[in-house]
Length: 357
Image (cartoon, rainbow, N blue to C red; front, side, top):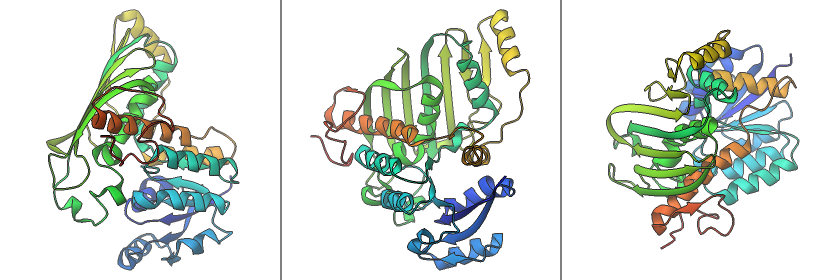
């Protein structure tokens, strides 16, 4: 098993990648370098984990043939240029959400990836944990049956001090608000379990903080499989909750309410009857624990790079999540339902910050 060398670019959430993603797999990855424009933070993270190589130059890392993976944890506004540059340099790339700020940007990345030596793995760490993975196995086994309805709630709290970080809360640098930076995780979980949306009606507003981007949103979805889904998001909840509740013909699933680890057990898995319960027990009876968040996603990424497993999250997954964001913004501006897929004919395709009114 070959050890892959990693360079972390951005030591904010990048520190979590080290702690949860790479250190638990020290036999698979080595964090060989870190990069940050904040030299105090660079020194602190480097000292904490004994990483000797520290730089403020992204370009220096691109030119280094000893680096296998560039892990991009920078503010969203520069993801697009950094991902394209890293792919062009022949690196494998890991990129935090949001991948970029428009569907046009995602499509640019997908074109770059086609010609690249390396691959891109977007981060959707909330897919991992015993709860969501059990639900996924039951659904994929055909036990759940016809999907009926679902509700997804991202009820978090962000106060003014959160937005004291200069790039947050601004369209130019954060690229969006609660839909892009917070609820994107749970909405990806929904589609991971229930498939893509077909039609979207949504509303967004800024009601909690004095910022440019939205901090409240709601949407009604018609899924491709016919299910109805409601999404609710706010950054003004005094109790932080992440909750998915999915109703199928034979099973109802409800996630834990933990805001930042909703994929973990205990999930409610409610069978319609004893026969369904017996089928569920057979499917998950040999269950092996699934570590939450970055730990499992990075482990599966190494399996892919070693040729022993699929790429756990791909660029198409990121596009699907950002397509939903685009549709909600377009619907909120126009007051009309938006059919999917969203393509170049959409007024939001090139930049969802463009007004449609």
